[in-house]
Image (cartoon, rainbow, N blue to C red; front, side):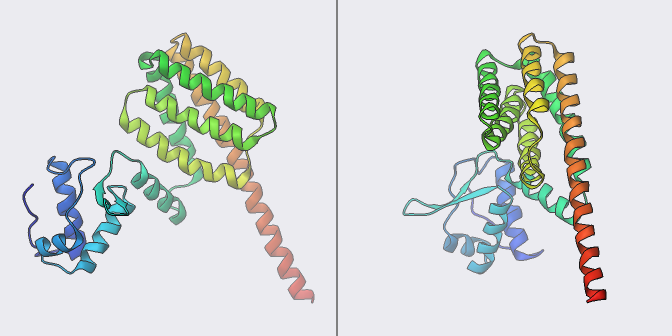
Length: 254
């Protein structure tokens, strides 16, 4: 691999990151490759080691590289990961650029497309993994273990996305599902009578390779789920508003 060029423009750390990304795009750096040491990078870029550290931290946050400790550690180009997408979505949600409703709508679209493609592309092993998730979710529900049920349900979505053989759908599903976990933890899980029967219907449609039916079932299910989450979030907002109003009343009359 050719050495990097000295930084001559832009914010130094951004330039360092851009050059590393460029070498990944051209194939000079591949997943699993180890970057030169911090000292070597600083010399090649003609910048301080602090600047290199800042660039590396930024690339790590974006999910481009992975830092490993120990004698064989260092900065390595990461295998495909949704970390950067998750971080971006989370930031946009926190800033109010996207809303839970936007997220739910996107999830329904991605999920319905994934169900359709999985009908066409899923292998027998894919089907077995998805069915195992459904059985695990049902077992968790029967035992009253909502955490177990939720973990299995989220894993089902990831297995469904993998069955499409489309890495972009897999990354999007992973990112959206990761954020959706936060809503589930915040407002509580949806009832069993919605989740488990829908998942079993979907598995029957997937096995029958009924693309239209599977797509429709997944979309309808995710829309119902978003309605549930939206209602819970509204209740939460209403409760918070009532609490603030109560505190103001006490203060005014105290």
